[in-house]
Image 1 (cartoon, rainbow, N blue to C red):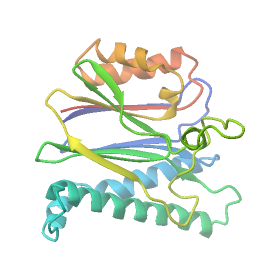
Image 2 (image 1 turned 180 degrees about the vertical axis):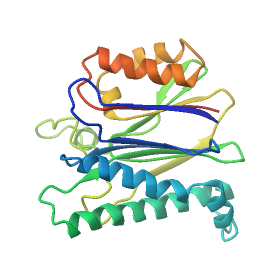
Image 3 (image 1 turned 135 degrees about the vertical axis):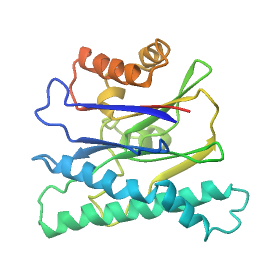
Image 4 (image 1 turned 90 degrees about the vertical axis):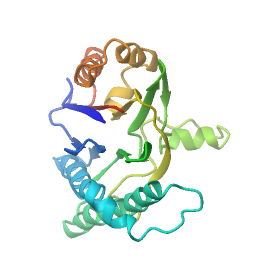
Length: 248
């Protein structure tokens, strides 16, 4: 795949606590939105992508494939990547949670994560922890592929009982707790699909119809990524803004 990424501090923040990761082979994209303050959010997000990235490189997948047996209808390459994603998130959580404990932080650092892995067999494996999102543009239609791990989504799923929680309270993150699990999904990608990975600095500031309009204004991944970041800043830039655009 072809991919471009941009990470911007935004207008109202003093530092950027987001991190992005794109492998040289064009098969892995990761985006993390850190939290914790006093530069700890940046440490958490960077630790997560630096830990998870090598797990998902083509060489690691080839090695893991040697031990993969029948996946019950799941393609071997997909089963392999899903297994590696689980292991990678566990390792990243161990790293960040361990630092929280070692440094005896009063406010534990943590990070959200959203990732995409493209396999040789035309499959796309996506995964996330928290409220960083993934969208896909196919045949001119924009679709949100991830569902936020947030108190608001849980409230909606629970029948909207009780007071409505804020949309920015997340229920899963890498680092604050001893264990966390990602949501992992897969499907077959099509030639010409666009994928958007973003932090809430974009999704909270720019409406889906505007994201779709910007998407369809160009086929250049770099131009789209920069245009989306600019749109978030034009809307107020209240948070760090990170965007990755991938085209298969």
